[in-house]
Length: 327
Image 1 (cartoon, one colour):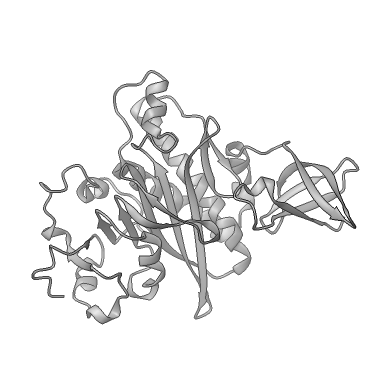
Image 2 (cartoon, rainbow, N blue to C red):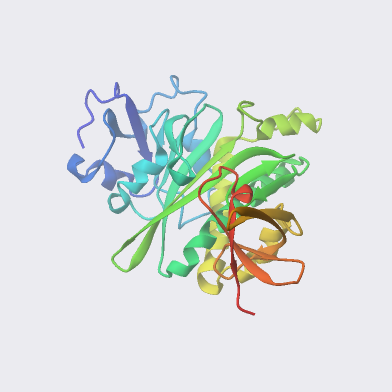
């Protein structure tokens, strides 16, 4: 791929790792990139210009994962890492990761779009599954891997564990404040589900909420902050192991780890249901996940219900509808 005069591109995307050469020598028409975006070799990157940005060399140091996390696409700014991979799923090898230091049209659930500031770790990666029934659980596997990665880095750096929790279905919280989120989307193609998993994690940016390094300071730690490159590398190490278990044995072996990390065991939720011209309030207690990946809850008669988001509330726990489960 001829890259002359492309270093001034609005959205330069630097390619490194496995299959980088094959990607860069492909015809440009093979890719659906946003206007102003161009694929470039990592060798063309001016590290003096991007000295405080994501460091691809540091990321690949001691990387253990072989299935996910390479090749790496990095850009100082993109409209959306998720869109890049979703629109080019077949053009990049499965396992490709796309990282941006900032996004101007990041993808959220229900089609929400937001601007993602510098200081976040923002990335998307590709994977495939054969069984569509496993798709609802993928976001849970990714969420486990995010927290496991942070905890592992804390351990090897001699740092205290942060009070990280999963807010169903796909948010990472600490001290009742959102730190990050997970988004998984899929399309069916050639008897497989092509999945793009996207993660946003506040590492250095203290606004709009808080970040990992700010939490460390609150615990009295002033050295060895988390680095985005280490977090990403460790995430893929953890996710690759978890995904191997998930694909061969399902989510059941991972349930205990998930429940240890989530906020909701024994939590009471109040559902408002219309009946004729009145509104009834129904109290339910969350027990876990249902066999299809939604919330499992019981009423005061111990009747079991599956709870689904109604799609109208930003907070999923404030907009639920129930389906009675057969006993």
